[in-house]
Image (cartoon, rainbow, N blue to C red):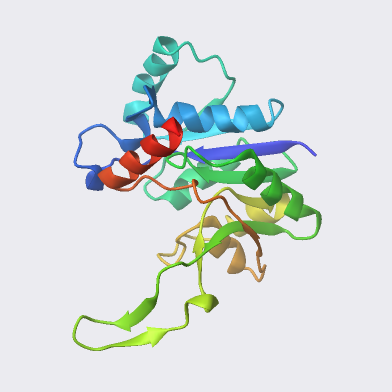
Length: 220
């Protein structure tokens, strides 16, 4: 089946303590977003690739493509006010029967994880990659808390993959703050996602320590 893959790169990197958005920071001598784009192109060169970017950073991205001689075909979409709106804009361009949505700042997603997510669409309309928790959990605050059974919880990763018709129907809704990812949007119309395992290196860059960890993993 034809695949469309949306790579979201609308962040401005407040927690990275840098003026440059985190998707453009260097990882192993190359911008993070280029790593991510290359991962999906290597997985399926025939897939439709779409990147959502803030309008004011599109020309910067185009400059990076020239500087690093990147010729991977992809389409650009202006990001919206919220991630939800960015996906809505990108869906207008999607032509695939299956749609994957991935955080642009998860550059070390493995081909195995991507394949596992799309393969899950043979039996489900929505598939979400997850990792089990390793640390113990407590619920409450610093002075009043209680133990939580960690076996009931998962960490949610991307790419989250969907039947195209189902995803487009879900995104006809108005935005709600409860929509923290694409699976939550689809779940609001009654579709329960299938969970599959992700890879541990599929870390989302949100703070400086994440970039250091990914740099070490890439070198290894």
